[in-house]
Image 1 (cartoon, rainbow, N blue to C red):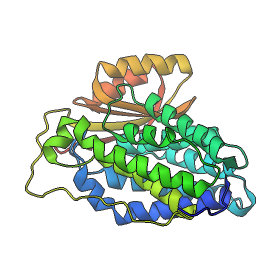
Image 2 (image 1 turned 90 degrees about the vertical axis):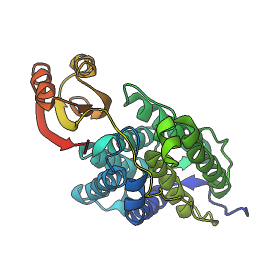
Image 3 (image 1 turned 180 degrees about the vertical axis):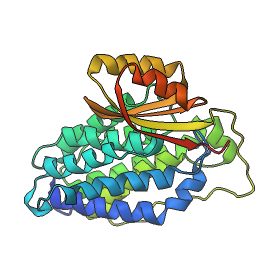
Length: 296
């Protein structure tokens, strides 16, 4: 594509991307929900990701600061902090950690080379948030973005990121048997792909929109995993975090963590929420304990 002359990611472009991202998530919320078959077919990935990002953007307002007077690190940090505090579901936790890793790696603005490092930090942070990471998920799509070689011109760089991310999203169906059986791409992967579509738009990339093939309504998912999704905030230090992680692994699966000590948000799929609460309270101060039925 033609050179646009955009050589930095700054706060205004980041804010434009976040506003566009919120719109894209809203427009595709139900479609993403319908694609949601892994790790649990509970049809909430679109809703959870949208809610997480709404909280992230709302945190800018709560800061009582003029976004126009802030630099990239400040704006990205506020969005990530808001998303982490109010993360919803497995996808929301991973998305929040992706944004947190990215935000922690930028300064007042970023060249394409610096942005590539930030994307790598985001990918690493997201992967570290999941105790048992799987390929064919939003983690795989996030990895694809940070593997693209930077170009001085951001629009060219993001055009290449678009290609890599879309290809990675298409490959998710090949990597997970649940996706292959349902003939869909990963719902969380779509969430990450739309984030990079939003960045591309903010940077002046012009091209075709991301095409997401809906799930056939004739296909029925089977699920035999845990019955409940539990989320809670644990106030603890790093050593107790490790103890809590170890304990939760004996009580359920799909464990993910976002935030920074001392306040961490934990996510787990389990059959006995009360056991999770009981054992967690022995290790940390627990608040905002939430239980949702996974629809099994």
